[in-house]
Length: 123
Image (cartoon, rainbow, N blue to C red; front, side):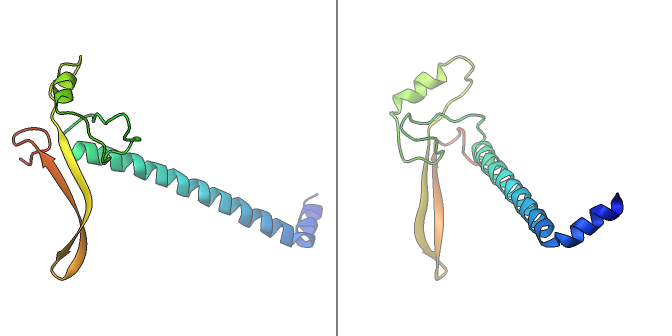
């Protein structure tokens, strides 16, 4: 029985090789996509946690982007602070990818605007 199996593999080695390479590529793409999704999740957690917050509230038309350019009124901060389970709320402004010349090189900078002594203010 084993002899027949190996003889068949020798006869169809190209088909076997194509199947093995194809399965390897499918597995590699699956692992790549899994890592990509994990990276997006980790980046969001690090961004939110980096300013000392546990959650962020975004404008309804921000389409889920943490660094969205959509804003909502300052008065909404007080309404959010009064929401059940909220212990502290503060506004945060982020200006992304403003091109600057630093030391003769073009750089992208991220500017964070925070209230002094509140969430996001460096210690």
